[in-house]
Length: 147
Image (cartoon, rainbow, N blue to C red):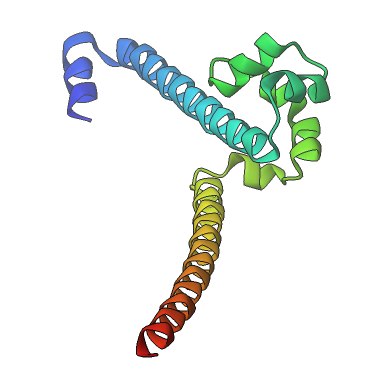
């Protein structure tokens, strides 16, 4: 606000209104870019969750792969033209798509953690089986040595 006060003092009220419009437009443009990044990141996560390539996702949306890549990279606002179809193919609501929290990231982390736990459990079971087999072998050796 001090910045705007200095502008008013230097240029007067009319110039301040013009500068305010410029600042406001830059703020809107920045927020639009942020939204493009949010949507792009979510689309990338959703696409990877389904195991699709960019080409497959772009085919579902009936757009070119390069157009889809620009959407994922946050370099395009054309996602807005396809938002209904995006929500359909990725089975999300519009609210879920535009949320700024990291629910998808948390979901991916939970899935990865569950997979790792399952792998550890499987390895533990195999290791226990191996130890039990080795214990049997050692008991047999002990019995032979006692005789």
